[in-house]
Length: 310
Ligand code: BDR
Ligand code: CA
Figure 1 (spheres, rainbow, N blue to C red):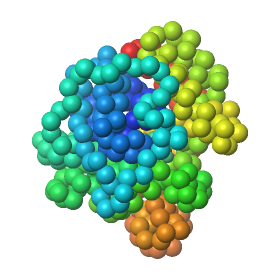
Figure 2 (tube, rainbow, N blue to C red):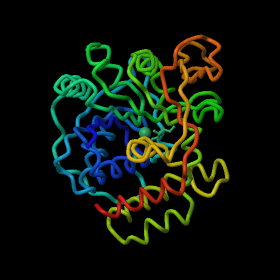
Figure 3 (tube, rainbow, N blue to C red):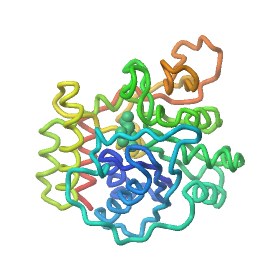
Figure 4 (cartoon, rainbow, N blue to C red):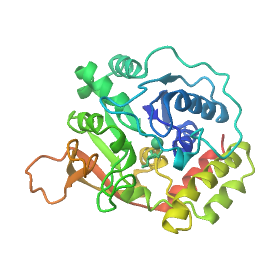
């Protein structure tokens, strides 16, 4: 099994990613750290626990992390995810406990407690918790196996500003810390996630499983996709965050390329832009494997098959 920590701001697509991870025997979810992003931290940590309970895994350890970005005011996305962050299904309030340790400290302790190259971090929201851990404990950087994250947009542009994707835009300084940390990084940008569209046929396939988890997942996706469908006129919306977990399970579903990626932290016009050196013009060595394509049918089959086991 592969040991992972999921850092997340649920979010309907984060929720599907959590369900996919918790349903997969190849992955050992050491803990879930919540971060402020789509909605404030008090909701994201609660939503993370709701999803662990929905998955029938209340023993999963959930931690609360950063309440706000490193230096900036928090920007949220209720206009996408609804007031609760998990609008759609009617999920009960969680009864499983929230761990008392601060999320970034859990990340530090867990990486230190395992042999080098053991723990993979999976950030699905703004990178604040990961950056806080790396800043407080730089010794963990060479011990992290890999950071596989959803964030950024290259040819696809941005979804908050013309050039910035939400997770990077909310905390660009944290993203800069992560991309300059020396830890091997895999990026699932909008270029990939915008190809993972939740068509009606794909939602129907999930519903046809007739399980409480698949039904709730279908409701989450139904709510979530309306935003992009309305905005872009597509059949279905992109299912961003599960791409990270799917990559861990089935890297063969993706193609990508090693490149150098830098984060814009200054310009008001392009703040949070992921600047990629496709042609090696900077001479900087690659710091990320940037995913570019996905087998969307295989991706949705994987989600449907796995969620049906919960
Ligand atoms: C990212 O932003 C959030 O709204 C989603 O959960 C995803 O992580 C997509 O830009
Ligand atoms: Ca997210």
